[in-house]
Length: 384
Ligand SMILES: Cc1ncc(COP(=O)(O)O)c(C=O)c1O
Image (tube, rainbow, N blue to C red; front, top):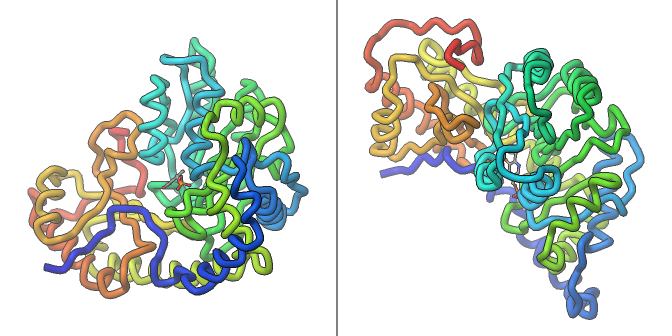
């Protein structure tokens, strides 16, 4: 039976630069043999930090100091350390999008943090709702965690107006904002929206980047970009003697002469996959579902008809070899929702073409009626 795996967010193995990485590893070992005998320390490999500062400053058109960057073992480490450093313990409130990365939900839940999820629409977090929520809260939240571009799971990007509004609200309530931009360079089309730190040079803007999405998650490299005192507060929470220096040295070698070439080439292929997926959905599901049209990232968010039993659909799809991530996994309240996430970045073209009709058949089979569902939009679910 063919397997249609749209469940796990991964980069595309078809564009993995094996030969260039092999060469980079050989060169890095020769150049860094001495340094590999030492612990890397809190900030990590200076060469890769310089390159990541260059990456940020070229994308954002502002100066970025490599001394404000600390490499992390995946951006997830920065997400977790920020959660630890900015809160005092269980019961503290963190503002997030209503749908956010399941890894963050798990990490913050294990810290006992209370995540208050703000509704999301096509322009990202609804900041007017956030303002009303903050005004009514008896307890001040510790920080805002937001996925501004090509959000996981919805694929939406926060508009410029919303970013500016978020900055204003955060300033009014004196809240640090942790911006997780780990998909920021997985960009397909349109303007790249600026990071919050580029819109407003305020030390309360804490920023997280990753190499998992533009290169590969197996490298386990990401970074924190922050200013005093948050930079020190967050980095001092790590007790792992630094990020993998070998992986950092290899990637510094890989990127030293061309920071963007691989990413641009990989994005073109990802965009084709996104287009293929949109075409397949249009052909098979346009009368039954609505979905996001991400301009970057690895995910598409699909809304299911309300008359579907979610558990039956999951089982029926799995029987046909079709796997997806449940909307519930990304809901900060952990409640079942009539949405699912399709990860398309690693799925072979043929599986996209053949898989979506299978999903459509499973959806048809699991509905209680044939009526065309009435959605005003992707996000207008009154139950949310
Ligand atoms: C929004 C978001 N943040 C962080 C991560 C963690 O990525 P990594 O630790 O591989 O950089 C992910 C992974 O999927 C993610 O989607």
